[in-house]
Image (tube, rainbow, N blue to C red):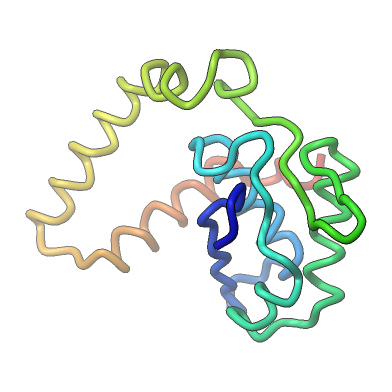
Length: 145
């Protein structure tokens, strides 16, 4: 990574039924919410994403254009795509530390749940799949708005 670059890696699930570019958009937004990405960070180049995920470069560019349209990132000719602002609690508070403090009760509850799932014998992938299924069910229809 170069200075100012964030360590964000996109994971593409070809069986999810979610368009690939939307997976990149959603994962970027999640990284913004969690403080993994902050204003000034450079997103991976389209070439880096293509090398890591074997997707079409136009798909990456479509995702980045959508993020730019939403005002979250900005393309700087010859330099890359950079984060302009954050989301959620990070957007209204002072930064990642404040967001962590604001999210602490939920984070603690989620950590407790993950420990119980592990104690019950679920593997990491099983826990992720279960969480994703519940999350998708909870937010069903939100993507259409």
